[in-house]
Amino acid sequence: MNVVHVYDGHEKVYDGRGSVPNVIWNVARETARNHDVTVLERKWRGLDARAEHDGVVFERFDLRTGADEPWERVPYEAVESPMKLGRLVCDRTNFARVALSRVRELDPDIVHVHLPFAANVLVTVAPSLREKTVYTAHLGELRMNALADDQQGQAAPAADGGEVEGEDGGLGAPAVLDFVSPDTYLANRVAHTTVLNPDIADVFADRGVSRDRLSVVPNGVDVERFGDVDDARTRAIRDSYGIGDGPTLLFVGTVMPRKGVDDLIRAASQLIEAGYDDLRVIVAGEDDLDGEYTTDIRELARENGVAEAVSLPGFVPGEDLPALYAAADAFVLPSREEGFGMTVTEAMAAGTPVVATDVGGISRLVDEGKQGYVVRPNDPSGLVDGIDELLSASDSEAMADAARDRAAEYSWRGIATRFNDIYEEVARR
Image (cartoon, rainbow, N blue to C red):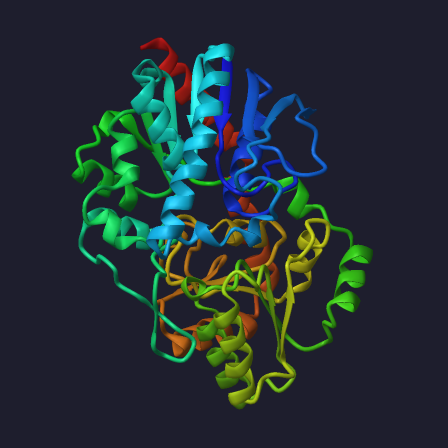
């Protein structure tokens, strides 16, 4: 079977950044064991127009609209003004034009799309593609709420306790969603749609998407990569990131309001006041997508007297990440919105217990007191209680083993098997 992935985002898929490229790469790599798989994406400076990695063929389009820009320098990805929305529409339409021509040439059995912009152009201009197209909706709850029309334009809390304009889970244009949802428009026109958790499936069904064309397929984790870290590498990472003998809390993710990093800073302050004098907090991840929020986080740490305990090293190279997870005593994800929480399974694969908020599919990943603790979002005191329970647990080894066992249930090979089944079902229609 020939499978073509179409990705019009502003991150490279192979060895890229961000959760969506990670998903595409791992699904493509694993399904390439059974199928001929091609990924259509943008051409970035320094990358070949055509390449092959682990059996996956990459074809890259030199669009000259948005290409050759690092993904963090594409401000119109946060569609917060008519002008930026216009740039996005022009850029994605250009991508769709080129992609459609190549898809027609390849004539695949399955077209797997991951974002609703160019994909909507494809299924509208070429209706014949609809019955062979699979859409993976990489949606979290804030976008889900916009789909459901029940929290239109609701702002997320900011580091200073106020609100953050335009923080709606990545789309940034709630006014547009008042009239049309690109996600449900697409889901109603393709052969099958996969979502990250049952709550999002319910929203799509409420918006008219047939239940027999919806599947819940969570994100996976590279169990071998995150679980196979030797002690020497972990020690080197501890030295590199300044991790001492005291308890270390780790956050991994883009530093932005919906990730709730401000709640983690407030929780750290309370923990230090409660006696965790040598506590260390590492906030690892892109910190320049929302520079104002990152500045607020640093100021919040100073105001709460924990600036010396908190470090923001920025983006962590992929080769450092497994050992950094392993070096931490607890992984903390204080998000206000998630679709799945991929970093939770990465941490658990490394044997690091988790304290995370009850959003998205996280409560399905973490059993209370076994792999860690689940707390309410927007509740620093709840984070404190969960972290204290975890750090003072007498059965930390059992918790680490339970975390590894749970992560193994989400191996990319197992997730790819579910996609293979969907591909075969769609191809039989």
